[in-house]
Image (cartoon, rainbow, N blue to C red):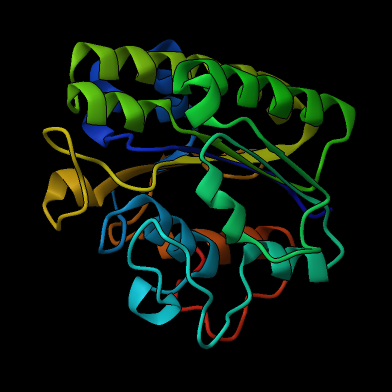
Length: 259
């Protein structure tokens, strides 16, 4: 039976911050997932380009999104949700950064819930997003769920990456990831946890390792625990998910399945 997938993304989560947090849920994922703390994102290491590449499995110079302002693709590529929807899968988004609405095309989502971080604040909206996703897991169980938590990135910009406030936001986000894992994993979901980019100082977007290196965890039934082979990239996530869900990747995709 094809897997259900929950893809959780913590904006701006650096791998060294994950280990420094020493959070019980993060430690459990390190022990029980197929993971890497040295995956790479794309340049520019900026939120919307990174998400477009994750969902469309091509670098920014192919999809054309080079900043946090969306522009329609000149040569459109099917994204992850378009491919899953075409395969009859029910897809759902839960997020708190408004600009992510353009990651999918109309008709590809069965459910979409957005609590604006601009309106509610990122700390409050993080909890609202996690609560909504948790209800969806137990009530409607979409085949594919994307859960985006934006507070960590906001704390980095406001206070600095690895600052006390950044680490507080990170630990709170892992609290939410633990709640989601506790509901989703027993129902047969495979759970991906990753980031779009890292950060340094109070910013990101460069090609320095602090900005470009991201964690990636894949945990679920039939996924062996251990370290992923070197070379994982964010553009490999969509092909991995389509393979696990018995869907077809778009022919233009450049990433490769990781499992």
